[in-house]
Length: 114
Length: 113
Image (cartoon, rainbow over all chains, first blue to last red; front, side, top):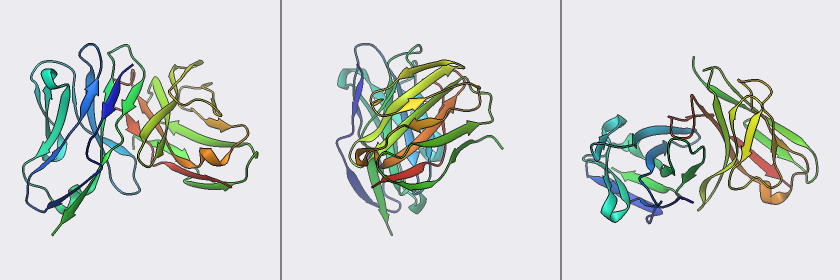
């Protein structure tokens, strides 16, 4: 079964600074990988996803993520953080196109300081 | 507006009193799923449905039931709630499965005393 680890529970970053959130997955083959964001009091919204092809994936709100098979990682990055990026971020994995189970990591809370 | 609607947003109940959390989507999605979110554990899948009358267990199905009699609705039923089911619940839907973009409802915060 697939699993996801987000090593950082909480990250504080200054507005305008860069941000990187770590995600490691466990799955035998190439999984489908996702990053979702949850703003306070809201449901989750998809930031980006990786299925195959180019390992650098662009998403919404200026986010990107890089798939590294050798490290079983799918880290999320943003070059310059805005105060509105304060939220909880979840990495998730599906085992394949026929797999209906989505496994989430425990999440990373991002605080943005002025 | 395309959306997933959950009701109620907040619910406080007592142990053993049956309850239903409703979920409805207006996007003609085939796939629907329920998750619970607990601090430090992220979201865990309770049940999912690939289509009408087709459901299957997720990772934490104990104590929950679901039904999918119509494509748009996927209610979550707690026959005899217990305090360990106190959680934040999310319903989500997509066109064809978990590998498709999931659209989430705004959540239902359930407290069982």
